[in-house]
Amino acid sequence: MRVLILGGDGYLGWPTAMALSAKGHDVFVVDNYLRRNIALKTRSEALMPNPNLHERAEIWKALSGYSISVEIADCSDYRVLSQVFREFQPDTVIHYAEQPSAPYSMISFDTARETLNNNLNVTFNVIWAVLKHCPDCHIIKLGTMGEYGTPNIDIEEGWLEIEHKSRRDTFLYPRQAGSLYHTTKVLDTDLLWFYVRTYGLKATDLMQGPVYGLSTDECEQDERLLPNFHYDDIFGTVVNRFLVQAAANVPLTVYGKGGQTRGYLNLKDTLQCVELAMNNPIEHGELRILNQFTEQFTVSELAEKVKQAGNQVGLNVQIDSIKNPRKEAEAHYYNAHHSGLIELGLKPHYMSEEVLVQMLEQVNKYKYKIDSQKIMPRVRW
Image (cartoon, rainbow, N blue to C red; front, side, top):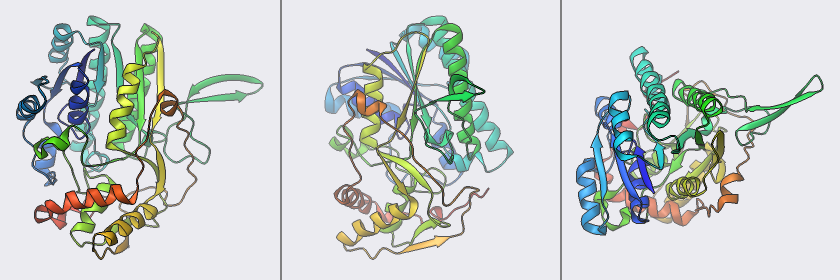
């Protein structure tokens, strides 16, 4: 297929580009380095050095023989994105091109506005570029399980059947996000659903849980191809952050009671899920929602897992409960259904002690670069 990846320089975008390129797809990536620039501005740089996108593509071609086309451009500029769609004519567009940090979206008016403008404008532009230039293109949008919040009922896979006063209908599952970033994802879903049912677009919305992982089959060939591995409080997901804290001999920072439960998945499974969505097409006028995670843990359970893995490599890992910098329920009911991707063929990589030990060993190679000041929470809401 002709696959357009928006946000192709990101933690998920670059590994996705290599994985699909290695399968023989014609891959075109677009990125404007927003995440890199924000990381520099907030002193939240990735742990491992990452070449720029053109250099990554050159390294990948030299190793694999496969080409990835690159354009550095702003997807929130409709004229730019429209030209990309018109010239490339993608069969599938994979939309990662959003400001991805909940804490960053909550720092100030300016960071909130930047998040809102970028995320909604890019999604809106994607929809209209597909409508105008390639209406058969399948939109695969990365959503988030954070859209659902933590309701006191089971979380269904995108849709909920309601009975009210003896009548029944099906609606998008009620969503109550805990940050502005997550709220932009809710609005993305609403935009997609409006244009799908109005103009017959084809869209898959992947409600992804927090991702952990350092490498994939492709980037294991050369460390210069590793994803952007962040460990700070702004861009670092909790598992990755705990692993760096363990390596740096910093107590693992459990926010509050540590009962916050979420669904997690390995980076390798993100690539599987996106490919499964791409290879299993849907009909015009359909919005398919898939809950994208493989296991559910509390933050305290994750800390214990990392502690045990640290013990296996001779680290004396400590766990420290600190005041929660976020407004969130610290103990709650959480039961999210996630059968859709399993039915499509997902073969999960589970969070075993062996997996965590391998990640710790990789992190340890770059231990000298860890800045412990980036680990503690700097953003509160």
